[in-house]
Amino acid sequence: MDNTKELTGFRKYCAEQNISFTAKRIFIDGLGGMAHGLFASLLIGTIFNTVGVYLFDLNYTLWGQEFALLVDAKTFAYTVQGAAMGGAIAYSMKAPPYVLYSCLAVGYAANSLGGSTGGPLAVFVVTLVAVFLGKLVSKRTPVDLIVTPTVTILSGVLTASLIAPPIGAAATWLGNLIMWATYQQPFLMGILVSAIIGVILTLPISSAAICSALHLVGLAGGAAVAGCCAHMVGFAVASYRENGVGGLASQGLGTSMLQVPNLLKKPVLWVPPVIASIVNGPIATCVFHLKMNGAAISSGMGTCGLVGPIGVITGWLNPSEDALSQGEAALSAGALDWIGLILVAVVIPAAVAWLVSELMRKKGLIQEGDYKLNV
Image (tube, rainbow, N blue to C red; front, top):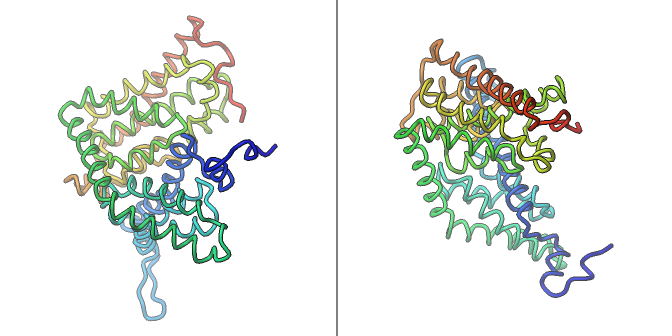
């Protein structure tokens, strides 16, 4: 059934152009797209650079030029991170082809004008505007090849020039405030940052995108890593009875979002990983002084593909621009740092979530099958 027949005026036009103002389309799909763009540029570039600088690189001479494959790839990946975010956001918003391609330029402009720390949030907001205006005119004229890219790019660049600098400044200020507060009150902020970012990780919202937008590195980034690991490992261990090794891997190395359908039916299932994050956060900040000096996006990844721990390790060796802007420096990680990372990333979340979930099962708060995944 065509629902557009029941609409009139501008609402009907928007439906015909696939323009949606729902929270899912904007905040779930849009932020998810932003994170994917960052994964495919900044994050993978950071890994390339760390491997190329500290382990090995493929050095060769071709056409009279010298190349270092991994380090050079990092440079190019970093350069296009704004374009990658813009294109990924547009794709997630189901933009038509000319709008999608044009958002590469829009994302590049917004990231540049938003600054090195506030760029991701600026790209998100500006690209949403450009996608909306581009969709309004898409395929509505005989010269769509000219009209749609013109409207999308010019509106995006104009919007970026107007709002990207203040958005970047605001995001930087808020992120700096959180990081400053974490250094001042590591116990309290360790609990808050760990619990909040961990919950966001499990919700269908991109915690990685939020950490990147707020530029969460340093001690606050370490607390965010602790919270994300607590939720991923916590759900994996708490649900082991129902889901076995497959569930352990899909949640512990994949995503705890798989539990969302079960959480909607029974929110009390959230208690074990939340308590694990509340315990894990201050241990990370106060005991081990765990810092995320890698890319800020890694702070919101947890054990997904082991990106969170890898980000911590790369930060020890080669601090990201995010960390350097906060005065952080490379560390010579000792045995205690490695032990702390293993405990925070895996051991503590697993132990606390298992203990709490078993107590709740004995009290009848969690029933057999409550955590069952359909995967």
